[in-house]
Every structure is written in structure tokens, then in C-alpha cells.
Length: 157
Length: 194
Image 1: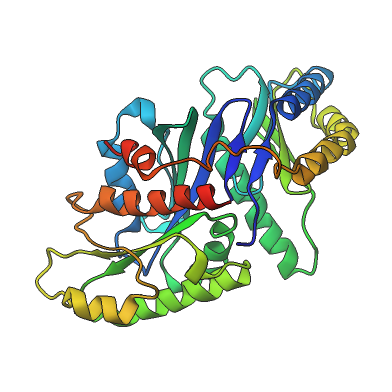
Image 2 (image 1 turned 90 degrees about the vertical axis):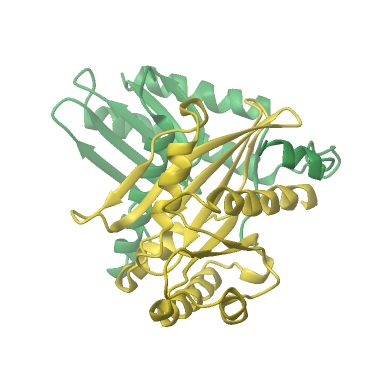
């Protein structure tokens, strides 16, 4: 397999949420969330309401993957940030290692402010992400080591 | 790539439906969408052309239930089948946990099946995966049509590693959930190993 699973501990999850909460406040954003490059949502903060964050995460990852593909065709490694500005709502995406930081904002904020604040937290997020990637669960009992065929079958009843 | 969140007690896995153009990948997802309770699934997102051909991917999150206190959520994706969308197909395979190859059983689509399967192996390799080690199911779709190749012949031609082979008619839903179950079971079994 090319990838190892991402294992997110409760403490790390709350640390990520705290960084996102501060970023959301500092950038006057509506919603801030973190997803991995494969489109899986990791943590979010803000006025989620009826916003379909699962679909948004998948489409944002597709968006970054597609523009990353274009970057490589013109000799760039990747485009580290993407912005989409709408009439009222806008989206800013920053690539931080294997994760994407997505900020959804409206007229209460501005692209300049969101860019600045996203950049300011990217180092901190990057350090947290490294810690998550290096986490060693070797000595702990995996909750899945004991999964039985009956457990799996029960999902399809 | 599986994502396990101990805080929200969730497991997320990615399954990709692969196969030649018009083999029924999107139809598989549409059936799952229609046959699943709304609280167990999210929206079905289709990035399609005006003529309903998949342009980038279809996506649907599906919650199957709880295993050992963890909610299991599968993210189902399809790739665009048409040959010239290869760049998109490569991107969608990133982070995949399991693959379903949807073969079109009609005689005249045999070459397209072979080409697409070869393309899958090549694109998996480019992402650092080996089909032989990946959870994988072969679905023989469109079994209701008159000009289909016999199952034994299709399996001999397209089978790679004693993978589960499921006969299906995705337009009526026959075999669709059996396919999903077969691949999901392998993905969860992999988790046990790791």
C-alpha cells in the first residue's frame, strides 16, 4: 500500500479544532475546515448549519488535485493556494503537506485577511500534522485487531 | 487511505468504481443512493457533461453502521470511463482503499474491458499501489442483455487474483449491494491486519 492510515487521537483532534477556531475568529470567516488530500474531512469549526461539508471536502480535494495536475503539466510542483470568489460567499484553500485548509467567508471578511491569517497558522498546523503522521500506535491495542467476520457481516443486515 | 478519528469515533474509507465508458459505474452509485435510507447517505455528486457522461467523478458518502463502537463511513467514487479522461482517473485513485472493476458483459465491449483493466493496473502502479494487494472485486454488469459473454469466459479473461466475481444488472440493482459488500468486507479485513 502506498499510504498508511491517518490515526487521529482525541487530544490532537481538539488541538486542531482550537487552531481552526482561532483562525476562524481572526479571519472573520464563516467556516474553517481541514480535509486530507483524498477528500476526507478531518475537523471543522464555524457556522456549519446545513452546509454539506462532506461533499465540499471531496470537491475541494478534487479541485486541488486537478489544479495540481495542471501545475505539473506546466512545470510547477503544485499551486499552494486556490481562491474562488463569488458574489457573496468565497472559498480560500491552502495546501499544507497532505492536508488542505479550507476557509469559507463572506462580506464580513476579505480575501487579503483570509490569506494572511491562513498563512499565519499554517506553520502551527503543519507541526501538528507532522505529529499526527508520526504517531506510533504500536504499543496500543487497535480497536480493529479484534474485528470478526460477524462484526463485518452485521453492517450489511 | 483509511482515516480513523478516535475523537469522533469514525472510520472513513475510499472505494473507487473503475471500468470502461458506459459500463454502469454511475448506475451502481445511483442504485445505492436510491436504495439507501437518507440518514445513511449524503448527496450524490455527479460532475458530468451535458450528455450525462462523467466528466471528473461521481461521489457519494455512505454510512454502513457501527463496528466496535466506530461509525464506518465509505466514500464511493466513480472515474470517468472514456479513454481520454486518463489524467482525471489517476487523480481519483489517490488514497484508494478498495476498487470495484465494473466490466460490461457485452461481447462488443470485451476489448474496452481489457483496455480499461490494463489502464487500472497501470494507474494504480503510478500511485504506488499493487492491484494484487488491494481489496478488489470484479463485477460483471449488464447480464440481462442478449449478447453477453459467458461468465466463465469473462472471468478467465478479466480475473486477476481469485477476486470475488459478482454478476450484476446495475440498472435494476441486481448484484449492486453484493458487490459493495464484497469490497467493503475486504477493506475492513485489511484494517484488522494493519
